[in-house]
Amino acid sequence: MAIKTPKGFTIYFAMLVGSLALAVGIAIYDLTTREIDLSQTATQSQYAIYAADTGAECALYWDFKCQLSACTQSGAAQSAFATSSTFVAPTTGVVCNGKDVAAIGTPPASFVAPPTGWSAWSVVAPAGQGRATTTFYISFLPAKPYCVKVEVAKVGNPTVTTVTSHGYNTCQGGTGLRLERILQVSY
Image (cartoon, rainbow, N blue to C red; front, side):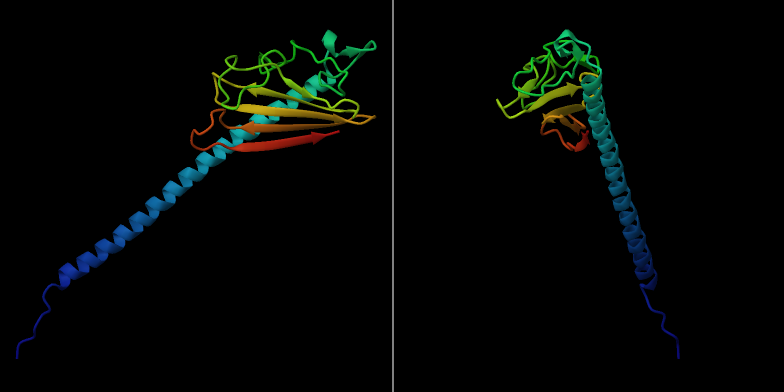
């Protein structure tokens, strides 16, 4: 009696090993692409937090070190930021990142590159309420796509100041991944 050898076993075994290798390869590729996406998000997040930090530091500097004539009231050096509706805000000379934010100031919603479409910084100070909020933007364009929106709120007597800095990894809306990181300082 002759022993029958199964035919096609080699092809079956080769397909099994090939399928297993393909599955492992696809899994490794998937992990690699996810890790690359995650590292790109982390990088963009760093840009946004650095922009927010720059905005907060600029606001702190101009709150404590303003030496412009518009920052002087009653002979004493004051902040560049409004404390009430009677405050006369500087219209020039507040420089952050090499740009005069008092003169260039607030961009439109589309965040176009300055100075196209930008107007002076905004101050909201309801009359008789002893509070004011100054808002300005800093752009890092054209060298870098980052930008920051800074709000300096001053309330009461003695004044309590809150600096809120919104950093963005890109100033252009609708361009892929746009991250916002916020830093807030109160004193």
